[in-house]
Length: 225
Image (cartoon, rainbow, N blue to C red; front, side, top):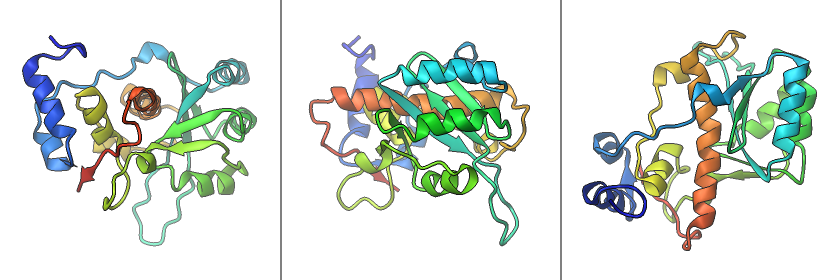
């Protein structure tokens, strides 16, 4: 076993994936171990004022938090999204999922997302700024989009969480398209939705930690599409 806990074969595969480019086909066909993610026992669906207050205290005490949103998909031509419907905020220890349908969550989300002293990190946050402003009147502050930070020269688009997990952890992040396009406007999310949403925010924070530890943190992570 090497220092990272991988055997020689897995470590070699990780190095190969971490070189100049990582194609989605390579990633799908790789035999990397599965990224374990965070468990249900460390996920809270915030549906009342008391839990919202506890979440606020925990998240404000963190030096940085993972951040993501989910929206109910639109299927009809010209249909306008009413999202985001769920906001995910993660500390290293716990993930809090805030359904936007609960009015008690709005002020807590505003205090966290607009806080200039609290760093929010995530992937693919390009649409979140305008969506949160439109839906909740929240102006995002102190946000780091890892998809932008990690991309290399000549790379079209942003780096995704799957590629970053392969690069930094030598593991495969599994994401179900069926779950990702499910009804996030529902106030009764099932376990698969809870895990999907929570890990989107939590993995971003873990990638950020790994990036800070990287002695070549300015070096890009390339995703060949």
